[in-house]
Image 1 (cartoon, rainbow, N blue to C red):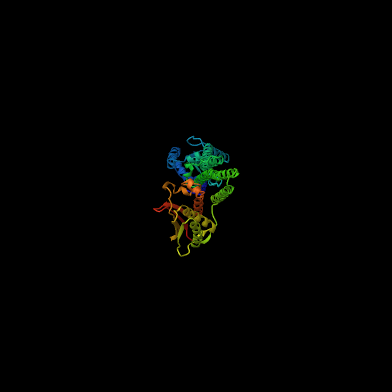
Image 2 (cartoon, rainbow, N blue to C red):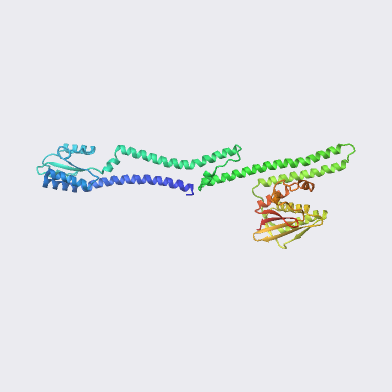
Length: 448
C-alpha cells in the first residue's frame, strides 16, 4: 500500500467496522436469545404437561433429559409449588426472584384457577398435575450467553478490546512517528554541520509519502554537501588565482620604485595585471551568480543572427594574431530560447579559446546544424588538443591543462565553466573531444 493517507484511512475504517460488527453481534445475540425463549417456551410447556399427565413425575424427569438433549445449549427447569427445581438444581438469580414473586402472588400451589393459567402478566407458562399441583417451566439463555454476559467475562472483553485497539493504534503511531524521528535527527545533524547525515535505506525504501520524503531529504543533503564542497573549492581556487596577479602587481610596483628603472614599462605591466584582475573578478562574480540561480531569463532568439555577431568580433581578434575564423552559416533562422547576452558569452568563451590556442596562419572552423529537437554549434580549432583524462575537467572552474600556458595567454580558467553552467541552465550540454587536427567543442541547445 503506497499511499500513507490510504493506509491511515483504511486502518481507522477497519477499526470502526470492528466496533460496529461487535456491537451488532451482541445485539443480534441478545435478540436471538429473547426470541428463542418467547417462541419455544409455550410448546415446551405443553409437551411437559402432556408427559406429566401420562406418566407422572418420572416421565417428566425423562422429558427434561430429552428436551435438554434437543437444546444442548439450554437448561430447562421445572419449578414446583415450593419454588424449587424438580432436580434440585440451583436457579439463576433472576429466576429465583421471579419464582418468589409467583409464589407470593399465589400462582404456585394447588388447584390453579383456569383464568390465571393464561394471565398476561406471566412470563413463564403454568401447567398442573392430576392432583392439582401447579408447575412452571423456565428455559435458561444459551450457556455461552451466560458466560459472555457474566460480569467477569464483560471485564475481560473490555480489557481485551482496549488492549487490541491500543496495540493497533500504537503500531500505526509507531509506523508514522519512527521515520519522522529519523528525519528530525538527520536534519538536526545536518544543521550541526555533519554533511554525511542521511535518513538511511531503512526509511528511504518505503513506498509511501514518508519514503518519498526520506529520499528527497537524502537528495537534498547530497546537493547541500556538493554545493558546500564546490564553494570551498571555489574559494580556495579564487584565493590562489587572485594572489597571482596581486603578486605580479607588487613586483611591478617594487621595480618601478627602483632608481633608473623603466617606469613606463612597469606602469604598463601594472595596467595589464589590473585588467586581468578586473576580468577575473568579473568572471568569478558571474559564475557565482550562475551557480546560485535555478533558472535564467528566456526569450525567443535567432541563433544564426547571434552567431553572425560573435563571428564578426572573433575575426577581428583572430586577424590581429594572423589567424582566421571560417563560419559555415546554415542560411536559415534557428530559434532557441535564452538570453542574448548570456548565450553570447557562453559561445564566445569557447570561440575565443579556440582562436587563442589554434596555430598561427590556421583557421578555426565553426558551423551550426539543426538535428531533430536540438541545435548544435561545433567549433574546431587546430591547436594542441587536450589529454583525454582532462576533457571533462576543462569545464570545471579554474582548471587548466597547462597552467603556465593559460596564464601567459591571458586565460583565467573560468570561461568554459561559465559556458557549461549557462548551457546547462538552458537545458543543453557542452562536450569536448580531440580530433586529428586539434580540439572540437560542441554546444547543444534545445530548439524551440
